[in-house]
Image 1 (cartoon, rainbow, N blue to C red):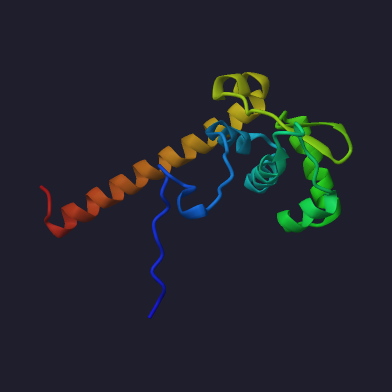
Image 2 (cartoon, rainbow, N blue to C red):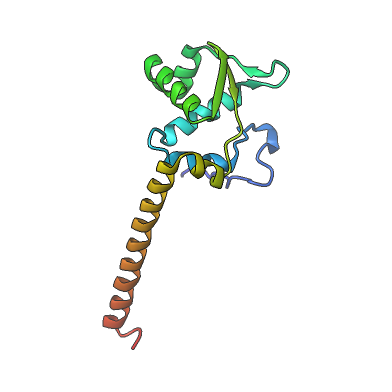
Length: 148
């Protein structure tokens, strides 16, 4: 018999002692930046999770980050540079990170027009697929006699 798993409780994610990383929904726009991908958003989330409010910084070692991120030390280091470049983190000194609030969509796309171009191309592709699938389903229903 398989284990029954509970559905994620979005209204109260930390109930029953669980902890979750608070992440702004504005970060989702960053995946459209040419140098970004969802893995880098995960690295950003790890840094957010490591942020110490009392200290005013996150200070995991590169080795700690690379283990939690599941990437090599060199890859993690280069991805940290990208996070800084796109404005998701700053680091006043090596090993000390400041996770920054992601920009709102309009501000982000104004700052990175190449991301807007990528987003609009992906959206257009998605819309073409949806329309093609809608027409195919309509044709199927007609052939099956479900519609006139």
